[in-house]
Length: 311
Image (cartoon, rainbow, N blue to C red; front, side, top):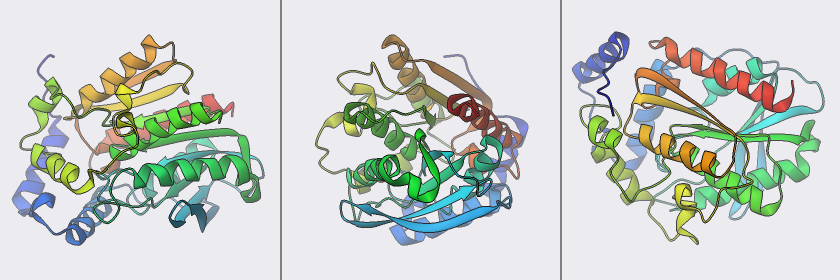
């Protein structure tokens, strides 16, 4: 792959983080890592845009109630809905760390956005988070009308580990006969069997390091019922799955994962839109105070959702 370099603003952000001397997340206890990540996102994300409708509720799950949040651009009935799954290596992250973008998507896509606090590792190892994600999707498909949502227009999306969950949830939805308008994946991790060129190029001296990814895997590794549930690239087949929108950061260890998944979906006849933002790094969508590409990515995904929902 051609050599890629960080944009000036991305490099300045990295330099500031390194000068601040924050301990790497993988060196912290899990609870401290969660707090540090939440604080980091809070310092870099775009300010929370006001939305006319913001609610907290719960969804029945396989191991109890799943905390959920809804943001919507109006109280109008029959809004389409995106189920959004936050990133964080299956270990950190929450609905708080994706709230800024979810509010932007709700406003710009003219759709409701529902995010869930799926169970995290190491307390709940994989596939607990996937079980919660699919249970939430099933509930929205069957009961979303009780929230004033149009259950005929549902999409699923997520970033990083949440992108993994979204991709696998889309495959499970296909197998269960739940039609989806779109699967929206920001830099998903879709395989763990090979070190890609982007992993080798961008897993050092950056925020998503090889050490942090190894720590995430060690914390979250469990007994998936099917190996492809964690590695959707290796699902037995991809035909018939929902159309995909895949957003990637060029200077990201997971960039090639997203490219590989786009290729696999296209080979199966699935419509794919693939967008790469040059010179930015993993998690850039949560860095809108410093990186203009974050707002660009929010806007482009919102447009994709509008098209998919027929808004």
